[in-house]
Image (cartoon, rainbow, N blue to C red):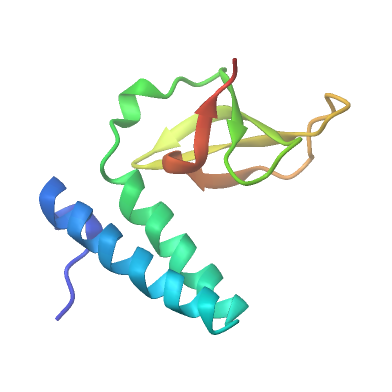
Length: 109
């Protein structure tokens, strides 16, 4: 039976990320775009468990890694997920709340 990422040690998570990165690289080399995207999401999830959710603050605005022009304001945190709203280049907040793994959030400069 597979373990959940929340049950992994930090060392196991790092090993898992390295393993997934190898698989993602192979998928990219063979042109398997959807397979590559799946591995990228798994990497983001594993990396989220290596971070401390207490370092991410509700009300703060973060850039979204891999999504230029989009920022994200956190409403609340639930485990390694930040719930909140995307903000576009015009500063308009999207109407629908969503959850992102904290590993894709980057502090704004």
